[in-house]
Image 1: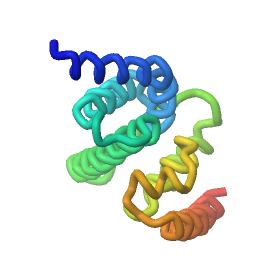
Image 2: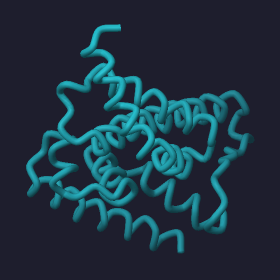
Image 3: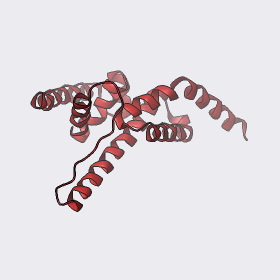
Length: 168
């Protein structure tokens, strides 16, 4: 192994030790499946190793990579649910598995509300509110200006409030 590769591996190992557990926990809350969340977090670290030299903030980068995978999972799950619904002729019920904590109605309502946000809002909400990244970090990770991120968060909060109010 070349010394450059060893240095990258060592640096990523430090980030792994510091953040892997929390990344898996965060992803589990979003997906509701600990094994899948573990796979998502692992994949984010594999990607981090390949992009290490261009990454400025490893924590923010990891949460962004994981959030993108979660978003893909939600899309796939939506397509699968739609196909199942068609197959069952409208008689099938979607079953959602979620992590313990909040009661099922509250947990699913918040998750569904975030999932239903327009694409441009969903990632900034996940990164800012769920991964606890600052507006500046979200802006850097998404390639948007801080003002745009603030506007997107404001608009997303309004949409979430409307959607959650309807279900309350």
